[in-house]
Image (cartoon, rainbow, N blue to C red; front, top):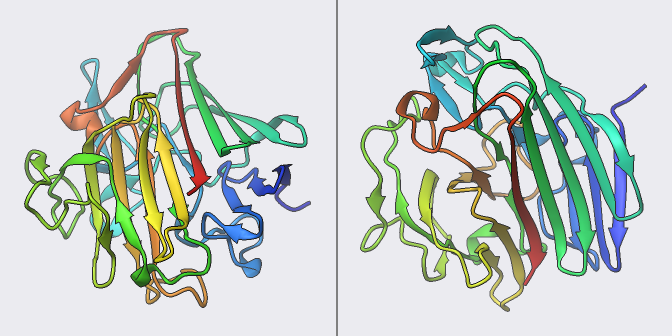
Length: 307
């Protein structure tokens, strides 16, 4: 049997969610793509650039795969061996278990068991739901073990303004700081800095022609309703907004060039705006690290809507 694909719809919104990595395979409104759909040849198990997948129980990179927690040193598998890092957690390549599937929503869950360097059992659940305002995604994590556990979560979400090429679009980010990274290992090499007056200032819309990013942003600025909104717009003003609640204090913004292996065929460059609870190497810096006591749960929400 192949990897399950769950179709959901509400009004003129359509989405496909897969079991592998609980990934968003496609999302559209009235036939206009809000995210980069996976090409047909990828099936339901091999998305380009990990598009749409859930990244947990850490969302980014861990230096040398090592971290110390509660006085104990841990050595994770080096899943990014070319940079000597452990990357993107433990669940993006696994099939999540279906809990409930209705016309407009799908709920899936997975148990994070014991892995090399990871002795902390967690139960993760994700609900993808379509409504009048588009897609809402609700993540829950529960520490089902007997000791405290570190935790972080992110999603490799891509934004798209219909069929308009990325270089013709403008980006606005509700973020006040950016984090410098070592270009060789993509790990922090200094404290966060204010975006004002720098090439990383997208607090007002800026064109993306020639812009290259693989950058963590923080100091996320919410609107009056507590949601922060980040927008990709075409020249006519239409586009897609990704919103996050206060549980997601970070974004990793990444411009994918067509030369990258397993990119999006025929689309040129693509843009990932990835909600994350913490920056790279958070289990060593402690920045944004969530600690769950036995039995404690955490919930975070984000979504996409047409603008």
